[in-house]
Image (cartoon, rainbow, N blue to C red; front, side, top):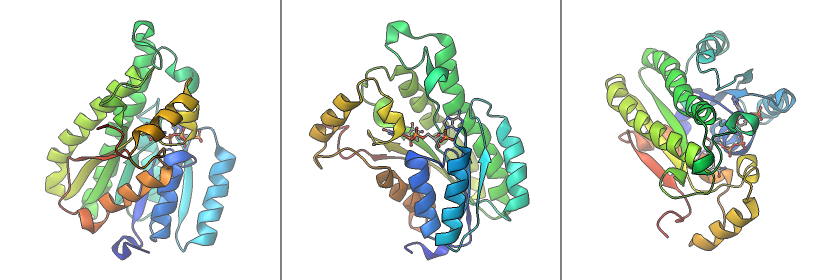
Length: 260
Ligand SMILES: NC(=O)c1ccc[n+]([C@@H]2O[C@H](COP(=O)([O-])OP(=O)(O)OC[C@H]3O[C@@H](n4cnc5c(N)ncnc54)[C@H](OP(=O)(O)O)[C@@H]3O)[C@@H](O)[C@H]2O)c1
């Protein structure tokens, strides 16, 4: 355990079943943090993760269904979490949509369609807003907390087919800075962890995945693509007391790929 002060606190995170969200769930559980995570399609997998977490760590874990295309559902979700957990200390807006919902959004600029762009914006920005509002109400009651939006360097650097996601990520980073200013008086810190290409299902769905993988390894001075655990460590740091004066910040965890 690295961050002893986090033991007994509660993390709420969207999209805890796979990729980066799952790595964050395990990183926080290792540090004694109770976990409320959401899933969308993988109910069985979510149940398995809950069992595994409770077996291997002395924490409470629970999984809840959520569709980030319906951001207002966060209100009911947090009411359920209130019944199961006595406090909320950390909120990480991590989930991402894929498949049919991003049609017209995950494409070349000339093929973009408002519906696809709107879906991505809703799932990225509106979900962050409503989830953070609900989390902040609970954090105020316990004297503060830490909110993180997971972003990607695709808003700083061109990635083929990524204009819909890249612009929504730029927007959520700006939104996080606004939230940071207005929530600071409640000792709630709001930050962004922005990742370079990380090996997960979301990236494997890229039409040119193999090419991205190869290019990323070449671009990184560390000569490899990112792993979900690379972002999980950054989230743990930001939620810990070690980052107590860090707010309104975007932390790039990109293996040096953005500069090169
Ligand atoms: N992979 C990268 O290269 C990369 C780089 C930088 C930043 N990021 C960011 O990191 C975050 C996580 O990405 P990832 O690569 O870990 O994704 P991933 O492996 O595809 O996992 C997506 C997660 O989101 C959930 N989800 C899918 N559709 C949803 C919906 N409609 N409503 C609610 N939850 C939904 C999934 O739940 P189910 O399993 O139940 O479907 C799953 O837990 C995203 O914000 C992404 O933009 C990714």
